[in-house]
Image (cartoon, rainbow, N blue to C red; front, side):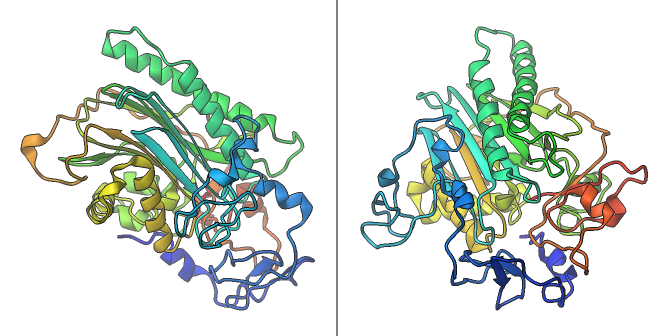
Length: 453
């Protein structure tokens, strides 16, 4: 499986981390890699090494620890005591510790689970390397399997301010529109698809409005995120996306497929004929060409639909998962191994948790979000080749939207400031999270690609 960040890591000069400016007040240097870390961090974001905090976290940052259910006051407050320990499955007490093994539980914003119905579930996790979770998800589902569900995943741009709040606001706003505007009573398939496609455009606009509403108009580093969403209505799946969070169809029999099309430099290279593994591992591969936020260049999502897909899994995920298994065939192997090793993972929430654990075991270099909806009874796992059981896949007549707006970079996991510690003009314009591909900056001075996490 391809490791898309390897070439990026090798491109960082060995002396970069220790040749920058002195550490700022309240920060220090990682003893392992020399990267700057805050005195209250337990892990180095640069190399993942475990640290010993020497100071308490400042009061102004405690908002990151507010339960995800209360961050935007959109849901009823959750109960910390109802959470299960990630280490042993025991009960988490009100103070945030497991009553059985004593392990400290992550904050609800750093790791949360949504399971609106038995056939839909998801997990959003901080990962190993990042100091906070800037991914978000928002799920909804009717009780009857295969009836109606909405899955939304957003990935915050780590270089922008308050991206963890932006992603959560966007995910919940989009979910609200997709649930509230669910069209009913349309017997003609073409009408159903057209109505749902239009609703996706409204949902993305609402998501962007939610971000902008929480953004300081004078901000020079406006919060931003990607979005990928899918709606299930019986045997119809409609999806839409902006950025590089993805939608996959993982078929029990027959070929699995990546349904969404990334807005990224890697996708542009693949379109030009560069092999996937090379396109997704080269410099600037995590530069996205579209995003949500106050300075978003385009809010029309790329959409598509799938009818009568047969038995399988609908997967909506952030790049924290697909970084380690981008090709659908690689994901099939991961799904199959998990389901063979743990039959209980047929439950969507448990399978999502196992996929998150697998991504963390590969390095957890990014935040990880996995949302799943199950189609049909589980009688196998993705990638089975029993053609006699295969159901036809009808992708429909939808064509991905072509966008010609300027591109911008989102966040690669390894930040690369200039040797002086000050961003140059091109990097500032890109508002990137790390490595900006100089060749990707448009000559007309428009925003460069943004490198995304």
